[in-house]
Length: 292
Image 1 (cartoon, helix red, strand yellow):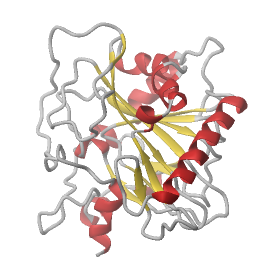
Image 2 (cartoon, one colour):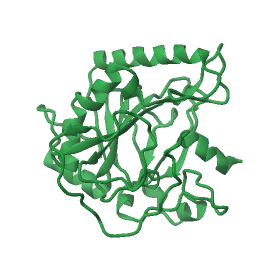
Image 3 (cartoon, one colour):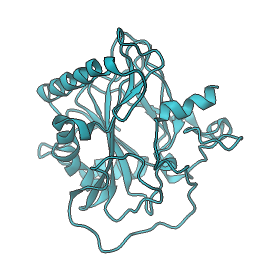
Image 4 (cartoon, one colour):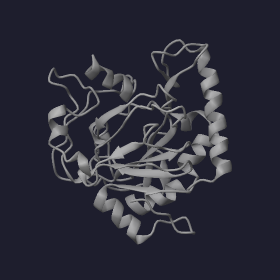
């Protein structure tokens, strides 16, 4: 469902209901042209800095084709840590106030990342659920993607499967016991992917998805960029079952509201990922195991 937030920068009751029913929401026009231009400028500066990098590090996830002459990034890691404009998006833009309408008045920041999806070489992201990477004590956890460029079918716009957030968290381990960051083919085949929705939206829009929602994206086969700044949030009373893998000083920061006095839990079993506390590469690197 693609709808516009109210003039006051709030979601309508219908949008809130749509999110809880379908597990996702698309909202165009959250940031204006000048704000997006500033974010593109700082992003391009990061790409220039990456010319000096010869391997992935705390800031950059390099594509295997990366060179100093032609820098190719799959991801900028923890962008909110590394530039005040990215941090503004995560903590001070209209986005956190929209998130409180979906998660409740007290919200914590979980992590940020900027998926680059460069022209002609931007990698695909296989079918997965965020909950498989960082399960919490309750399900009030979501991710907000801010489009720095128009998202289209040709440049790898994200696809979602409405209502799949009400289903199980599928294993993201392969048959050999390796955590590969994506669902098994047999589980995907049991889903009705004909119901998938492609989130084609203009720059400045956001899409929000529940952390149990099945989603994926195709490679970028176009000559245009598709850069997506993602910020993840959790209700303050949702406690992570796994150690912090972000190594970010912003992890767990209270974005809105007051600290809770109790944790809230949802009944049910959840598969646990490996311990990424000593380092996490990226979903792209994990999913290369399935291709190997």
